Image 1 (tube, rainbow, N blue to C red):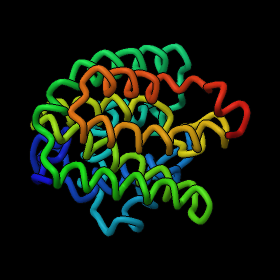
Image 2: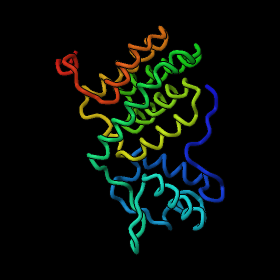
Image 3: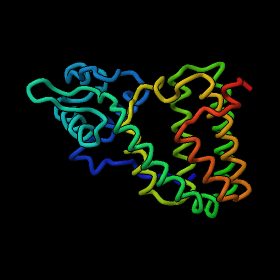
Image 4: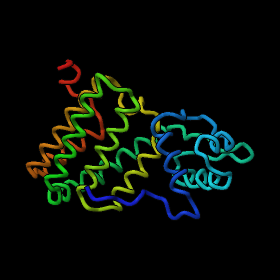
Length: 221
């Protein structure tokens, strides 16, 4: 897969990528829980950074709404707002289903192979992995899927939208059955992409993002 630019890091002066990206990744992986305060001294020790670098990274992540700033108190990890999460889900559905045609048209065999490998990894981790590992592989699958469009700005935009929802890995799926359903949908996406079936890809992506529990999932099949 072609290397993509880092999402949302304007330049070294305003947001040091090494610090900001590592902190964002740790928040997304659930290493900092929603509502927890981010103490600059502890972050300096954790990331081996100076005060200025930590401050710039915090300011940048606050601008992306991954964390929030409270005057005279400091920064804390964003708490999920159900109404905002629903709006972001709808935006993602609009963007990603509209991208289905570009995915099907532009996906090369190496893209399909990479996605299939990630789908298998996700499925295997349901029984043998941690929630953080499952979450990170899921993110990798979706980044790789969007990358098939060849539109780097779309990858960045959706990545930033995902930052605005809960970073806690356990919140990504409502039930174990929904996780298993997501695993099946990953393989369905791969097959639709391989067949260049735009209509099918559109349907699966919408279902995958909206996360309804199907009758099949409810019956545990």
